[in-house]
Image (cartoon, rainbow, N blue to C red; front, side, top):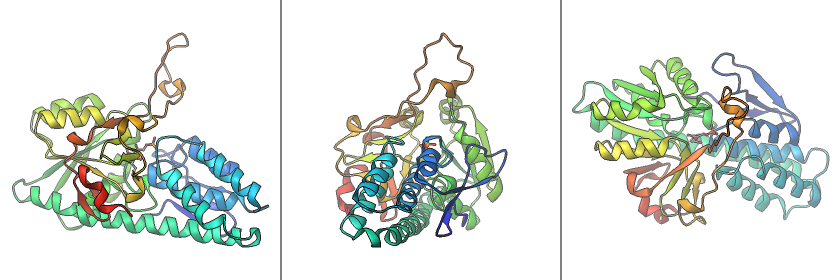
Amino acid sequence: VAYRTIADDGNAVIILDQTLLPDAAVERRLTSLDDASNAIRIMQVRGAPLIGASAAYGVALGLQAAADDAALEHALTTLAATRPTAVNLHWALDRMRRVLAPLPAAARLEAAWREARAIAAEDAAANAAIGRHGLPLLEEIAKRRAVVNVMTHCNAGWLATVAHGTALAPIYAAHAKGIKLHVWVSETRPRNQGRLTAWELADAGVPHTLIADNAAGLLMMQSKVDLLIVGADRIAANGDTANKIGTYLKALAAQAHGVPFYVAAPRSTIDFACPNGAAIPIEERSSAEFGDAGTDTPVANPAFDVTPAALIRGIVTECGVIAPNDLQAIRP
Ligand code: MRU
């Protein structure tokens, strides 16, 4: 799928406001560092790879008025504080720092736009490659099933990336090849990113069914799921994987019922400096996301959980499908 979620015109960054989707598709122009950091924080842009690209563009916006060391540091620290779990954010900011810090201030703005565009283009290319590498997993199942039943969680489609998606990239590739598919789309409380996935799949003409998160175990027990594939927000060096809250329960059910469980993510989502899942910071979001909890009811709202590497059959990356205990093999 060739849709792109983020672009620029040299002065502003143009995004699709995901807080209004799927009910309305509204573009927004981000013209300042505050616009960019706010867009990430309130999830107008979301999904680990898109958060990374947005942060890179945010640095360019932040250097428009001044590009001295103080302005660069301010942009980097402001953007780094927006969301804690998706490591693509820090990966992109580290890359921007490495490129920009050694340059004279007068050269930084142009270099920032150039590097942000490169990060975005590389993300799109990596996700297209994830689609190609994940396709054989679905082709293999199609040899013995009239319809391949895939389950996914959250939204790891093109909306969550610059283009193509991660977990949905192999699904789009298989659909384009004429493989008959059906996708179980988990609603993903409390933010309902499953509705974004359903919207994407409807647009692409991929048959799908929206389910309550808690229906996943029953469907696996009833042999209605051939394969699970989800995205990732941060993969530790040992393969433990943080993804949207509820992913871990799906992985447990998949293990219990012998359903292969795959993670799809670009290398920019692998945190080689993070030894294991226990070291991954888990974002705690506002109780307001529950809407109707009642004012006196205490709410806990962890936005991500960690699936242990042992529950993951393989990690689909732009470098191929890698065993979770073999990530060092693709360390850049
Ligand atoms: O809180 P979100 O909506 O930004 O979380 C997104 C997810 O958990 C995605 O599944 C993950 O980032 C992979 S996106 C390709």
